[in-house]
Length: 341
Image 1 (cartoon, rainbow, N blue to C red):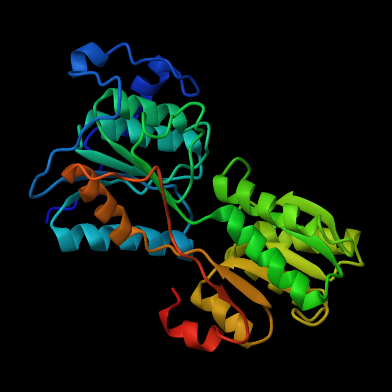
Image 2: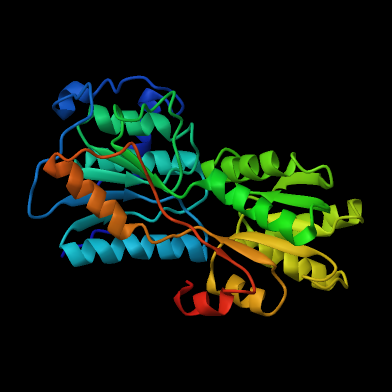
């Protein structure tokens, strides 16, 4: 299999084309007539022996979850003999990912998988791909359904149920603390579907418990260093806090480092709750530093390509396909550790 890691259209060319239509607009590309057929509805996907598959991954700086997610897509494309057209990106900027999407469209790949950095900013790119007659599958993070319409602009959304993940974290915490806790919440990236939905699911469940209080809730951008800095500040500002809920493992690692520097014992003085399921976080459960980790399964490759091929065959493909996520604490962390990423 030939794997392409350098987009065929230079970044500067893609960005220039993007600026011609406007980053945040849903306008039609004025050059579409020169580019070929325009699809007004969901494009078909022919059955073939092999495909050129575009992958627009959200950029993260060496994050374990994102690395495992990317590896799963690459490995599965290899197994099936598909050509993966993939540029990993250079920075955490939705406009940069928009340009990479435009490059994939201009490269005329057969199909695109995208994990969008931002729900709203990337939605017009999905519409532009549809108009270029390229079927799109959304993975991991959602796009704004008011801009990119499910079943019209993209085939299916494959993801974990982020809202349920937040609810699962809250349910475990309520049982563990017998419904009494003062909580600091470290949110994910502003505008990202996991950040939005993990907060919503958690907040809704906690609001039903009179003894549970969220003292502070601020974005840590899924970043370890930001989780560290927020912990230092928010724990000082809220000395009664006895729980920190982080929207991902990376921020939880920052939490643990900060607490230890402050002379506090993670897991004893302050209970740490996280979401992801990395090997490091699982070991921290066994070490007593993290109370619980709600899994967010990163291995999308098999389900992503199975869904793509089902669509090519003409099967009915659901508008949403959910991964199954588990929950790990001291009772089952040792069993999970060998498969953790």
